Image 1 (cartoon, one colour):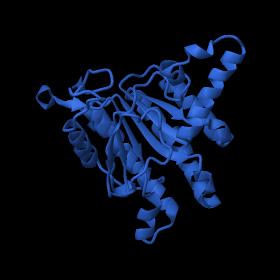
Image 2 (image 1 turned 120 degrees about the vertical axis):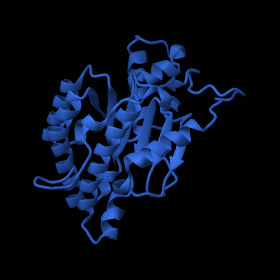
Image 3 (image 1 turned 90 degrees about the horizontal axis):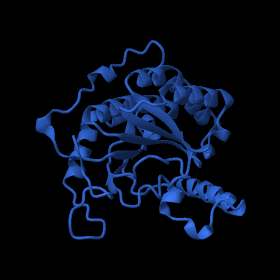
Image 4 (image 1 turned 135 degrees about the horizontal axis):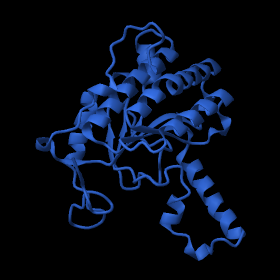
Length: 269
C-alpha cells in the first residue's frame, strides 16, 4: 500500500464488476499465489528492499479487485513464511508496519465489499498489536461471502500438517477419536484452511519454480503456473491470463475424463 500522502493510482473495489453470461468458462474456486520478487524489484530500481514490499501491497489490492471481478471464491496469498524471520531485522519491522497498516486501513474496506479476511499461520509469534488488529479484522468480516481472502503470515505447509496431526493425536489420547478413523477429511478439518476448498490454481511469481512449503496438502492436485514477472509488477491482466491458462487445462484426477475439480463439478460464472 502507498504511504500516507502517496498519489499512486490504484484500483478500487468498486471497479470489480461481475462477469457477464457471455464470459462463462471454467473458473478455479481457489487461487493461491506465492508473492515473490518484492526485494528484487526494489534492488533493480536502486531502492531499499522495504520499498518493494510497499509496492507489492498495491499489487495485492489490484489482484483482490481482479478476483472479485472474475468471481473467484477463495484467494490465498503467501505473504510471510516461517523462514522469513531470518530476514534482516529492519526488513521484518517494515513488513510488520505494512501488516498493521493493511489491517487497520484496508481490512475495513474489504469487509464492506463482502470480503472475509482470515490468517493462515501461527499468530503467536506476531507482535501483539498486529494480532489484535488481525482479531478485529477477522471479527469484522466474519460471515462475508463475496470472497474469502486468506493471508498466509508466519505460515509453513509442513508446520500446518504438524499442528493438525498434533490436534488429532490429542483427541486420540483423550479417547475422543479412534486412530483407525483418522482419514483425509478429519485431517483437513484440523488445517488452517478448514472449511475451504482445495487449491485449484497455484501461481508463483519472479521466475522461481518451487512451492516453498506453501499449502502442501491443499495443493496436492493444483494446477501450477510459474511466471517470470516480479510481484510488484503483477497486474489484473496477469491474473486474467492465469485464469485463461487454467481454463485450457485438462483435470482428470487419475481418470480419463476432464472432471474440472476434485469433486467433479467445474465452477462456471
